[in-house]
Length: 296
Ligand code: UTP
Image (cartoon, rainbow, N blue to C red):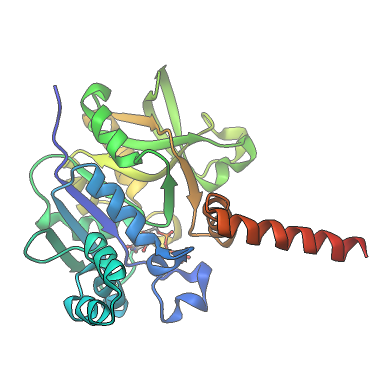
């Protein structure tokens, strides 16, 4: 049996304060890892997972996201006229087109939290469970949301969250699953605790930014009171639904980078650079020169 996940929600309305001043004029979701903006990796992942409708929950100040996501035929024509057809074709392949693709942009007027952002998409979702992708969690390797969609029916739980093991000392930076049973890549969970101290953490299974959620999430979010940081938290609404719809963690196979932080962004950049022969040489040369400087 399979359950179709037709909608993906991309919450992109946050302020990106950890990347100021870069995010004063440029949305965090458009910061590039090498030459590709974070949002593009997430769109490609959703497309590979067979998602039909993509809903971007953005902010009026972040119109550049829509400009990146949607086709720019005039730019492509200019490039083609200048003989840069390969570049033009690359842009066409990556972008979404109003006629060919099912795309919705909706606004979250104030950053009231991730849960509130997801709620803003409610009127636009197709029937059935919804995928949520946080673009600042970059997951390379096999598409994480595709793996989750494939395993969703087998999980037998309405809410499924991507999970990975973290060091015990790091539990205070994540939502942590209270795991009842482990079954291969699936973790059946009793609940989830937000950012517990290592001593109180029920496991080391941390939740990262990919979700497949039962539509009941929208009623839960509509009545969700503000939690940590005074924001409507998605994790609080998921945790409240555990008794009714169930919760499973999914251990994805790819490598995740927290590109909402400078360290994670640097790691992702180095990781991809090392896979490109020309850029790998640049990194090696730089490290060699730095080691010589240090030794001198
Ligand atoms: P983050 O908490 O990582 O993003 O949210 P942020 O708040 O923009 O970042 P900092 O902490 O100030 O640096 C994860 C995702 O959820 C979106 C963000 O845009 C990001 O893609 N988000 C967050 C919203 O859409 N609305 C919100 O109210 C909060």
